[in-house]
Length: 231
Image 1 (tube, rainbow, N blue to C red):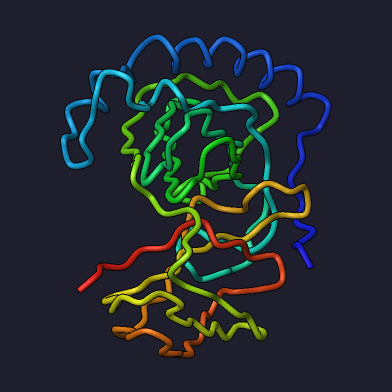
Image 2 (cartoon, rainbow, N blue to C red; image 1 turned 180 degrees about the vertical axis):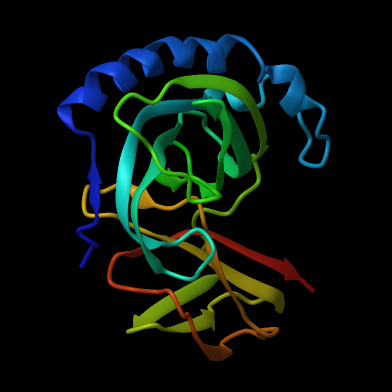
């Protein structure tokens, strides 16, 4: 079951913050984070049509109460700053850091593992609080996308029992270092947290099966990526 965490804006914040977001979206899109930033990364065969920070949208700022997921601690927090980020590209967002000035202080939002067309509530990296009259100014965005990420695969089969993942090699190849990456959903259907969890397995020969505990895997978890190397 998805967590029913409190993600909300009261009436006062809604008008002020949403008005700011509409302006700041233009700043994110047209300044600071340009396609030039993304195409400098040649690791994945970048071209002029590659995804970039221009494809990331800050849709809404809000106050969040619930488990703090970003560092894996799940400590309960109250009224900290969160932003709803959307990946509008056709590529997998591997990593991004979005920076804002909030009331004269620097707020950072770190997100990883966000598939195309998906959204995530990203909690401020230092658990910064938010006020009803907070002022937001976009500062910077650094991002890395992958056009080779395996969002699905016909070489691996995953079965889930609680937080135990059973991985089977259903291919005819030896697969070394297979990994499963997953994120958790909030009750509104968006991912909760910029964090992406990973479970690594040992080399799998054809028809081999391995089981591993996935500490943060729940009913609301969704696999967002697979990786492996073929021997």
